[in-house]
Length: 330
Length: 152
Image: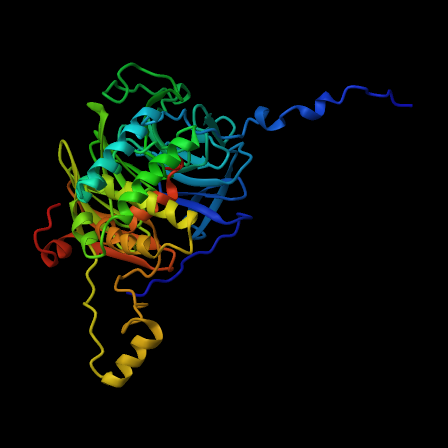
C-alpha cells in the first residue's frame, strides 16, 4: 500500500527527536535538539498544521515526548536531566512547562504515562527507572490513590525508583491496566515490576542484543524490539518473565548448492568459512527504534507498528503471528 | 597596578568537585571481601589438585569482587579464575560451560575480557572459552561486560 506524504512542515532548527500524535484532539507534539517543542494544530480550511511554540526552559536537547492519555498535557524528556510536563494556559494562550528535576541525574531517554493520567514513568541514563506524580493543581486534578501513589502526592514527587544493574533504560511502559511496569535497558535485560510488590523486580538477562523499545500486547505479555532488528515476545507471570518467541520469521537460509567443491575449498581457505554471513534474515535491516499500537480490539492489541533506523515502517498483525508461530501465547 | 597575589592556593582547588553536572555512581558495595577472595583461592587450588576442575570453575566464578576498592583483591580473584581456565583441556571446555548458570556465564565473560586486555598476544586458550561462552550466553553476555561499570 503506497503512502503519500501529505504535509511537510519546517519549524525546528535541529534534529527532531520525538513525535507524538493525540488521536482524540488531533494534535501533534514534536520535540527537537534545538531545545524546543511545538504543538501542531490542524487547520481544516487550509489543510495545514499550525505550530505553537512550547517554552520548555531547558538548556539541552529534548529527547522524547508523549501526550498523556487524556491529552491535556504532555511530558518531554531532555538531556538537561529534567522532565518538562507541559499544559495549556488559556489565559496567555500558550503551553507552560513545569519541571521535575530531583533526583534524575542524567539524560532522560523514555517516558510513559499511566492510564490514570496522573503518573509518569521515566527511564534515564543514570540506570534507573522512576515513577513520579504528575498531578497538577493548575488543572484541578483530583487523583485517586493507588498502590503506585498510596498518599496524594503533589507534582514531581518521586513515588518509586528501580535500578538495573547497569545500562541505560531505553524503553519503559505501563501495562494496559497500569498495574505493572516494564522497562528494557542496555544491559540486554527486560524487567517487570508489579505495583503491589514493588520490591520484587522480575528481571530476565537475555542473550540478545539490547532492546530499545517495549510495548504491552496484553496484560500478561509484551513485545520488545531493538538492536536485533526484530520484535521478541515475552510472557509475564506473577513471579517471572519468560521469553516467548521471536516475532519475525523470514525464510531460512538456502545453501548455495551451485558452488563447486573447488570453489568451496578456495573460499574456506580465503575467508575461513564457506558462507560470508552478511545477509540479514529479518524484516528490518537495522535497529528498531519505536513500537506503536495501530489497532486494538477491546483491550488486546490487534496490530502494532515498528519503525527503525533503516527507514522502514512495518506493521505487524498479531493474529497472523499467532497462526504462523506455533505455541505463541499472547 | 594590580595587587600582587602571594597565595596561589586557588590553583589547588578541585573545580570538578563543585561541578553540579558531574555524575557519580551510587555507593559501591563490595560483594566479596579480602578474606573471601583469599579463601576461595586456596579452596580452588585444592579442587584443582584433586582434578575436580568443573567444581573448581563453579567455585571460582562465585561472588566476584566487583568494583572493589583494592585492586590487589581483584587481581587475586582474577588469577584464581585464570588458573582454573588454564587447567582445562580443549575437549572438556564444552561440557564445563554447559553446566554453568546464566549468572556464572556472565562472570566468566567478564574474566575472559579481562584476560584479553591483560595478555592480548597469549589469548588463544581464552578465545576457545569465549566461543563456547558466547554459544551459551549469547551476545547479551558480551553486552553486559561492556556495560558493566564496576570492573571485575
